[in-house]
Image (cartoon, rainbow, N blue to C red; front, side):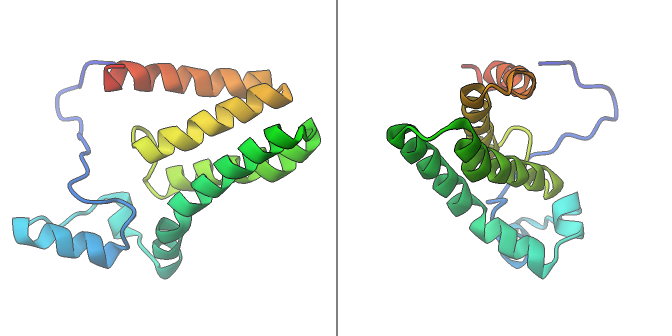
Length: 141
């Protein structure tokens, strides 16, 4: 955790960030909130589609990882089937404003950390470990 500086913006999600922009705006309208966050101000049909498929993709990569372990697949298969697509998903989540401390983002980060560790990508695993330690402090875990 860290101190908040005077004048620093604090972001809090008042609705499901995985909804398309129209749904988020509809949920916020009764409260008189017009959101101008990066995700709402730069929304596009592509970003809306990504948000709608993001969680399913995260679940799919987790299942693929578990199956790969069960079948004893090698490092290269795990990199191809899990590491690359999960890393791309995590990066896109950050671009879409779905990163940082959302539980879904943390779930993808945990999966990626496990996969990095399994395939011997230690430097990448260390970077994610640092993020996860910060999240654990933030979440009170």
